[in-house]
Amino acid sequence: MKPAEVVQVDNITKRFYLERPRTIKKWIRNIFSPFATFTVIKNFSLSVRAGELILITGKNGSGKTTLLRLIAGITQPDRGNIQVIGKVVPLIELGGGFNQDLTGRENILINATILGMQKREIMDKMESILRFSGIRKFIDIPVKRYSTGMVARLAVAIAYEASPDILLMDEVFSVGDAAFQKKNLKRINDLRKKGVAVLVVSHYRHLLRNIADRVVELRKLRFTPGAGLTNE
Amino acid sequence: MRTQDRKHNFLQLIEVFTVRELASRYRLSILGPLWLVLYPLLTALFLNFVFGIFLKIKTNDIPYYLYVFSGLVIWNYFEQGLRLSVQSFVWNRELCTKNAFEIMTLPISFVLSKIPDFIVEFVILVLLIIVNGQTLHGGALLVPLLLIPLVMTTIGIALVVSLANAVFRDFGKLVDFVLMLCFYAVPLLYSETLIPSRYSYILHNPLSITVMSMRSLVFGGTLNLFSYLEACLMSAGILICGLMVFNKHKRKFIDLI
Image (tube, rainbow over all chains, first blue to last red; front, side):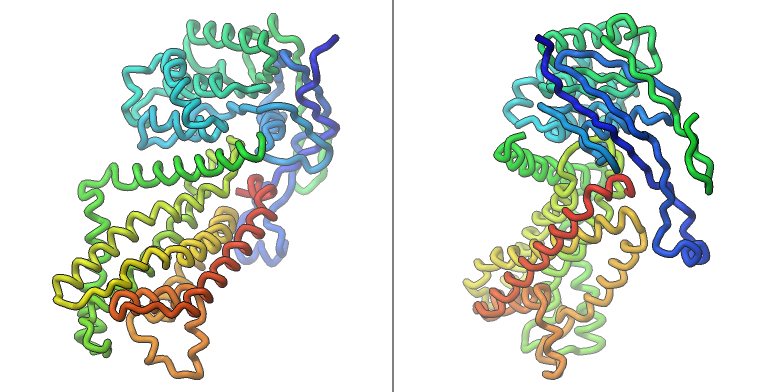
């Protein structure tokens, strides 16, 4: 028997709002509509089973991150449906939600809460977060003093401990040294064995091509201002 | 998430965001929490000169600066809570567009993070009254009750303007302007008895009622229960409207922020 489907993306379309300049003159021209729309994803479907590792690739602007944000429920599709069974943990911008003035430890509490963890759970997992991120020495220093790699390692470590059923990762492999990437791959494989579905957006195909169950390539929709849309 | 977990997570989000706001507010300033004391005290002293000594507004034997300060405790909470929360989504754009959580907790936490300020200012008020040799009425113990309509009103308004301001920055400007008008419309600088009776409807808002209740509790030891319930009812209405508007627009909002 095949593992159960945990993500079901059914024929979705997603439009984004672009912003037109907001001056009075322009406003009168397009009254009540300072936003133009731009379709990023059109009639796209995907289904993911528990334990699958899916690599999502595509050019810049092809909607990779948007797809992850849609599955995470941060934003909604304009058409179509998305069904998700289990807990989704999005890791979309590494450390994007960190407060620069607060320490690493304080940020762990905030970030883990955002990922739906309870306080007791966070305290229990603090040790493994510190171990995986490898920044134990600097954990009580404000995050603004961290390097990009340290911020990324901390963010990744928290997400792994948030007990996901579906893990969404955006460009996690663009930061960190070879040792850290190896550690990441090992962790992802461990999670898969436990039945976690992992969706990874990456330009670094070579790292994952061999272990991914499937590679999904998104095509870019071309946008010409004023005119409609054409598929590339 | 189960409903119970969701509720628990909602409260924990409010808690961590409130603590985060409090921690980052004073961490990088030299005077730190001393600002809590300086800000209201200097404002009251300044207003005492302009309105108490220059314009000589009558306040029934209560020193003018005490009179103003008692109202400022309420007003400062409302004004600063609103000003802070209006920017909540502007400052936390990345947090909201890259993470899945109940974003409503942000403006709510920003409003709640001003409660310690309220408490400190109230303690200063009590100390000033004692130092001045005025009688402090036992009714002052009931002042925390005033936080109920005050917090509900502030959150209700904050939910709507923080949402609107993230999309159209005009709302931040509008809030500044309306706050300036309210500062004069609410009986802060003067006694409500100075308002001609045909305009007295202007007093029927949660803010004016809490300011008046604060004074009658601290200086007279009484609370007009009917007015208080009116304020609670109105503020509950404001909060419910705020929640409804927020929930209606929050899905679309993330793409527009």
